[in-house]
Image (cartoon, rainbow, N blue to C red; front, side, top):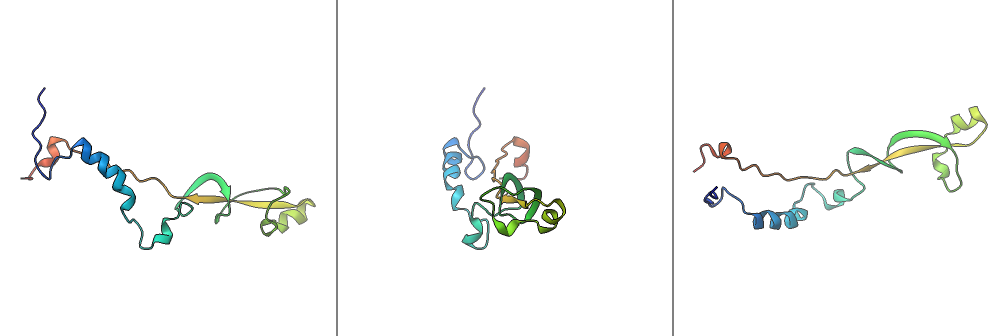
Length: 108
């Protein structure tokens, strides 16, 4: 089987893909750098923390933040309970390059 002849600007080499992998962190996906924090995102993680989406109520444990005590559940059960929230995380981004022959229609 013969290798296809690389056309400038149409085909990408393995070396270029590897270089792109290292440069992907330079791509600005958000309008401000502060939004690129690893703790900001739009999906739920299995980690529990100081997020905004309610997860569950459990019995208060030593070291829990007293600001998260659920006073209604505490009054009803006569035992302190605390609210847990989902901590948000960013999702990974994948860059895929499709180079099948059918996609080069009209290129030239």
